[in-house]
Length: 346
Image 1 (cartoon, rainbow, N blue to C red):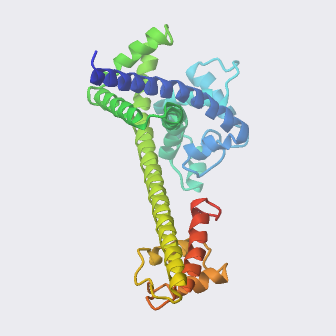
Image 2: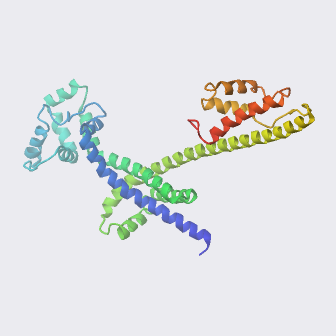
Image 3: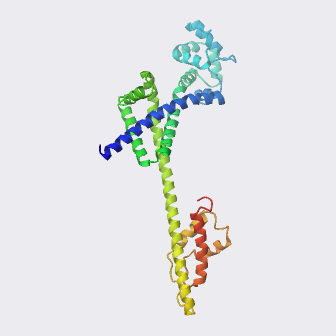
């Protein structure tokens, strides 16, 4: 098997791992989300279902008896055994299954309609509440898969330590999920085969189809979010590397000039006079001034301030060698500390 085929197989395997891993983690997050909501504040469900109008089950009961009126309707009109312990969610699911009947029934209830009108509401708002409450599962599942996708890929990126392979894997996964969407789930059946064979032998196919309907869009959004996150992070790293390279180059430039100044000073000392003077220097003083200001050093050290002010318009060729050397030693010290990260915000 040639090297290119091996790379394709690795990327394909990684893509499959990301998809299955995201699916499993998403299911875990899904169940965990309900536990968190039920522990923190169950009113979240009503706020969501009413588009933040109410934080209680306003539509289901005309008074403060919870949903007792609805339960009575279930028994007398629909023949449902209300001796069972129905929670609010179960009652709403039953109402959803018989929503048309309930709407017709309540449309002739003048007291109920007056209650709704007093709040600027109508039976259509009641219907929307029931539908949104019933569909909470779908919204939580979508959010769970989205978070799972991002977390799984992030964990892969930390442990894999191969960004190129990870990006190829994501590309394969994105192609697969898009192909599944465009083929109305035809290619997605391959994932079902993998889950059934390697993970859950008795997984229900209809359950898989329902879950996949929410998984694929959330999966693609999570993937795009990671790519954006990775791109921004990579740009930031590249900027930092360029800045570090510039600092090292500047540090080396100053070091070379200082070495040359030592040679010149030795020669002048032997000659008994300053017969050699530096006319130009290959040091970017403007960049040093900007970087020092950026890192909040500019106003903290009087020596640094005075030196930088002297060179803000470039090097003055009339400056004597001794003063130049002293100034460059101060600049060297500042840049060296920046390179070694002794200053904050680097």
